[in-house]
Image 1 (cartoon, rainbow, N blue to C red):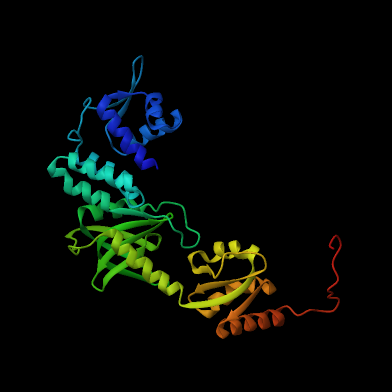
Image 2 (cartoon, rainbow, N blue to C red):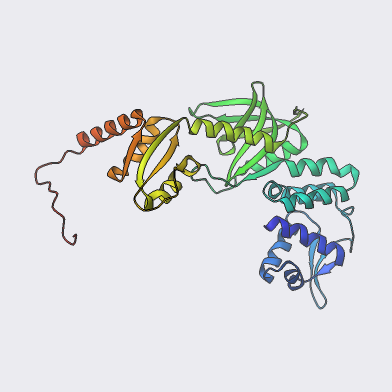
Length: 327
C-alpha cells in the first residue's frame, strides 16, 4: 500500500539524511520510478523533502538526519498524517506506524496530527458506480474537521431542493472515490454526499463533537442503516449455476447462494429495497431465472412483462424462425 511506503521512506530519510531513488527502491522493493514518485508525493504534501542535484546528490530531508519528527512544523505534521491517515482504516501496519510517529511528535503538535489522521477514512466497498473525480471541496472540508469549526452548507437533497445548514463537521469518508461528510446537526448525526454540496462556508464557531465519537464507528452505523434499507425485500430464485457469478456482480453483498454452485440450477437469495426494485433487476434475465418467492416480486415481473407486450406487440410478419447466420 502506498501510504506504508511513504511512511517508510520518510523514516529511512531521517535515518540516513540523504538517499537516491535507486537506494530507496532497493530498500522498499519497488521500481526506481515508483520510489521517485513516492519522494515527489512527500514533497508535494508539504514534507521538507528536496532533491539534491549533482554528484553525490539524491533526496534529502531538510535539517539533516534525525531519529524523531521534532523537526517538522505543525503544517508539515498535519500534511503527513492527512497523507497516511486514510490508509490506517484498511491497514494494521499503517495504523501501528502512525501511533509510533505520533509519539515522536512534539507534544504541541500531537492534537492536530491526531485530528488530521482521524479526519478521513477509506471504505473500499462499492455502492454502485462512483464518480472517480475527487471533489474540490474535500480539502476545505478536511480543514474544517481538523480545526473543529462549524460549516455553513448549501446542500441539494434527493428531491433536488436546496437547503442551508449549519453543521459540525466530524469526518470525511472516501467510499470507492465517492466522498461523504459525517456531521452533527440540530437533528443529530447526518451524512452528506460531498458531490451534492453546492457551497461550503467555514466559520469561526467552534464545532461540537461527542466525547466518544470515532469516525470508523459512526460510518459503520451509516453503512448498517443503508444496508438495512437496501435489503428490505428478499427473493429466492433458481438460476443455472454458471450465472451465479453474474448475479454476484449485479447484487453484490445482497446475493447469497444456498449451496455452492454445481451442475444444474442453484437456489439464490437476492435482496433489494422493494419488490419493484428486484423485479426491475431481474426482468432482463427473462426465462433464465425463475422467481420462487415471494409472490410480490412475481406480480411485479408479470406487470412489467404485460407492459412490454403492450408497448411492443408482435406485429404482422413477426416470426420465431431464426434469422440468417443463426442455428
